[in-house]
Amino acid sequence: MIKLTGIYKKFNQQEVLRGLDLTINAGETIVIIGRSGCGKSVTLKHIVGLLKPDQGAVEVDDVNIATLPPLELQSIQKKFGFLFQGAALFDSMNVSDNISFGLRTQHLMSDEKQIQARVAECLRLVGLEGIEHTMPSELSGGMRKRVGLARAIAAQPQYILYDEPTTGVDPIMSDAVNDLIINMKEKLGVTSIVVTHDMVSAYTVADRIAMMYHGMIQQIGTPREIKNTLDPIVKQFITGTAKGPITLEDRG
Amino acid sequence: MSYELRAKWLESKVHKHLPGESLEQKLEERLEEDKFIKFLGKYIVGIADHIGKLVLLFFQIIFWTFRRPYDLKNINKQMNEIGVNSLVVTSLTSVSVGMVLALQMGAASKNILGEPLYVGTAVGFSMVKELGPVLTSIVIAGRVGAAITAELGTMRVTEQIDALYTLGANPVKYLVVPRFLSCVVMVPVLTVFSNILGIIGGFFVSVYKMAIPSTRYYHDIIDFMRGKDIIHGLIKCVVFGIIIALISCYKGFTTEGGAEGVGKATTQSVVISMVLILVTDTFLTNILQFIGIG
Ligand SMILES: Nc1ncnc2c1ncn2[C@@H]1O[C@H](COP(=O)(O)OP(=O)(O)O)[C@@H](O)[C@H]1O
Ligand SMILES: [Mg+2]
Image (cartoon, rainbow over all chains, first blue to last red; front, side, top):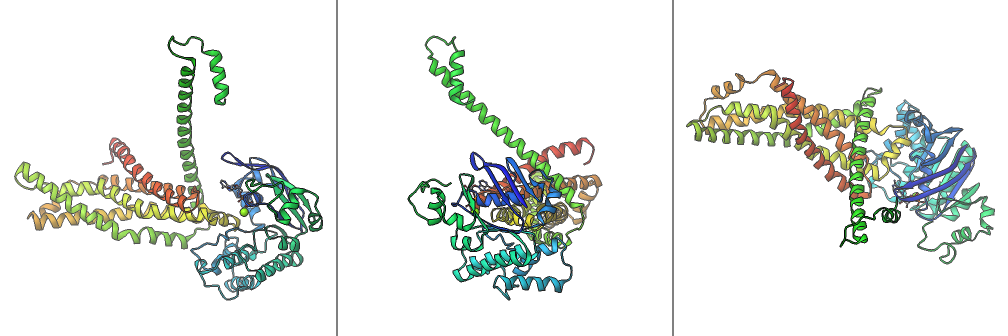
């Protein structure tokens, strides 16, 4: 279980998170929606300990990682797989080395054949068989995203954080990515947190959807509850209209 | 205290203003002073902050250097990149410098004393104690320091460094330690090459241009050079290697603001390293001479 309580985070003078509370139960898939720049990626980075809150607690399986010393934090980070918004592939390594990186550094597998088999399996899951020896710079944006996805799931983590998994991916492949997220949950019992702008994907994969606004959770509920929301802010966002309580200048 | 509050507070305090000087003027002055002190304070705190973080990075490097497993593959790769691939540039630099030193020393002593004297001594000592270490380090700071900052900075802004963390690799161990070790080992090694090549460059000029007998040139160096002169130069190299690695890795790790940020960080890294090398050289020479090394 992951529990965020009263998270405040400021960059220079800009307050990004203002007392965010969010609980993610084991085995569920939570989708976080919200406008660009509202702090969704920042929230994900707090959950894995890449960013420290100015105030508040981030508990992962009842350990507050906000105050954990670096070496212990590293052992907690092994529970996570993280798909970065920009994929963040290591561009000095080929696809295969990218995907197997976590397996090697965490000493999860030592047999080279086993590693190669796992790499091939992950690539197959994201629909990119046979590109093991390609360099990241030769891939398109959507392909990079999917290699990032393969890398995030390779070590079979307990929690997977997806930052915009379907952005830049074509609609057919998007659907495959949704299936992958659902499969991870159903077959492996993975807990997932998905940040997305893609409402179709959100309704498909989510057990619960949380909308972020002004550094807090505006509303959280099942896809059905969110669809039938009475909150004008949430309603405006999910229907995607320019007129409403959220103005274009208001970055949320 | 905000400026408005402070202005009000000053207003209640400042009664004894000089005739002809308005209260507003006086307040304005005080506020200007205030701004200046704030600016200065911010600047000093900023520098102290950087120094603190550099020291912290240094300790982290030491910690991770001795922690198993050793990343021999990456260390080897960086040694090659930093050492072997810099050899051509540093060699060219040092041969030229050795030659020009011999030319100048020969000309100067000829003007003053009527014949070129102690050319070997001048070239040898200058190279081994000063120009070898300093010029090699500066060339490395330009070539290698810039590359390190640009690479790590790009990794920072594209979140590859964050990705390392989430995949269970410590970025200091994985990225910084190999580069640090390579700089600390390779700067002295390259300097030794530079010294030898500089002296050989001086030799050719002396023998073929100024007709100094080759044994004369040889003895001018060998008769005066002591072990501690060489150690003097090598200690400097190690320190310069540490400076280059620390500054370039730190600048890379703290890069912000996309491609433009990477460019800025790279420039700053090179400039800071070069200035620090020259400034440290002055202090270090003094200290080393004081404790009797060279
Ligand atoms: N490392 C950082 N330094 C300064 N500002 C940051 C940093 N990371 C994020 N921000 C700012 O925080 C805000 C939220 O960013 P982010 O979480 O990436 O938005 P999004 O919801 O689109 O993922 C943005 O305005 C961004 O400029
Ligand atoms: Mg984002």
